[in-house]
Image (cartoon, rainbow, N blue to C red):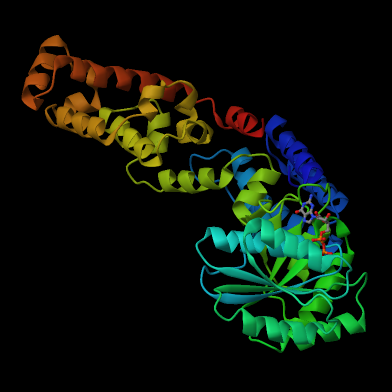
Length: 437
Ligand code: GDP
């Protein structure tokens, strides 16, 4: 998994939050300290760690949780949002004809990533060609030409030519008909003036759409120095962090991105050509924190909480009318069959108590309930206990449904009402624990 140990220590910091009796200043301070420790161990630079933890602490201590959200979930969301914020948005990569220049030190994974990128664009229906300008590392030519042959990607190279600039010039001319042209440049063992000059000369040959810096996730604090040097030389448009599958650290590379004000375009998560993923900040942090699709949770929760019809406080007070139930079902329906997510929501604390049927409730079913409810009096909708068997028959007839349909509706109401009552004690903590598993 990506950044296993950072993920594990962040998770254990958040576990403290889940286990705490109540979320007070002391708990927040402790959690923030744990987060700091976890990030420093993962090679995130200290300045960045302080900035991040300062923001988390301040927000956790001053912002009140929105109605219906418990303070643990609130703090958790702050941590999540600030982590996402710090790594920023992903570099936009358009699926259209373009030229790409790859830069980075030797061993960073540049050649492998070049092939992966070619594959990526080919799978999106674009015709890629790869140009090998790595005249420095013996074997780079063969490695890339073989990878391309395996992938069925056009390869351009000049085995015996040492003039990388000339090769790129020729290569760009020869591959003019291709949609996406990717130039793999030579790295060096360290930042050298020769390398920087070569990168500048190549960059000047074309108006490259992207100049991607390839960074090995394991390089630690030197990442920033590399990123700055390459950025000054050619103007990095995005970073590709490789070997995230194999490292416990990776924080250095993440810091470099923040330091140079660039963003991450892709991540390398394996040696084979499939091991490349488009970078997704939310998904990345969710995975890091071991929360599955927390992004979806946050979005859905916001959506539900913003629904005027769903009056959480009123429902929690035990007064749960048929109209409330309808609003709930509508909200659940809107969210699709996301049972796990529901069970994490303040509202969906009832997730544990409700049968799968509710989640599978279709639009048709909802419409049918609406029609049945239209045949009830306001008083009955407010207090369904008033509905006796003769009223069930009458409502069924009035709405053109069967008495079983009416009874089913009432049964759901009863079940949800019970679940609502069970929520009064605050489901947030239990749900947060579930979330951490
Ligand atoms: P270059 O010198 O920058 O062109 O580096 P290479 O492309 O030759 O990669 C160096 C080593 O890193 C090779 O053994 C690759 O297989 C390996 N590598 C590259 N990307 C990844 C990755 O995302 N995950 C893993 N596990 N290995 C990678």
